[in-house]
Length: 74
Image (cartoon, rainbow, N blue to C red; front, side, top):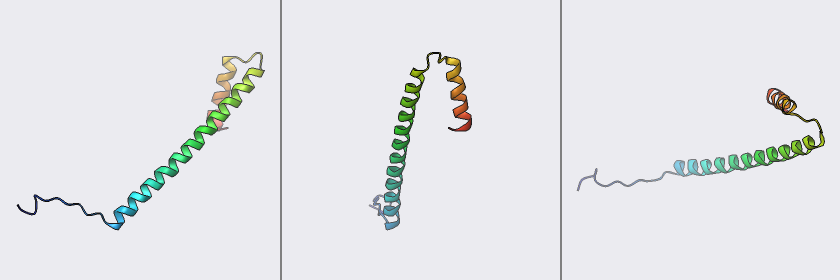
């Protein structure tokens, strides 16, 4: 048996730190994405409630609002 037959992987402290940082970053990103998802759901619900108060709310008005929001980010 020669040296090429045995494969052992040693983990350096730098690799451990990098893995921990990776996990921490993924967790932080996931929390942020969940927060954004909740905000989007809240705003969608708010929009639905406001739309239901308009008697003549048409698809044309809906499209105009969507274009305005996408353009100006509000």
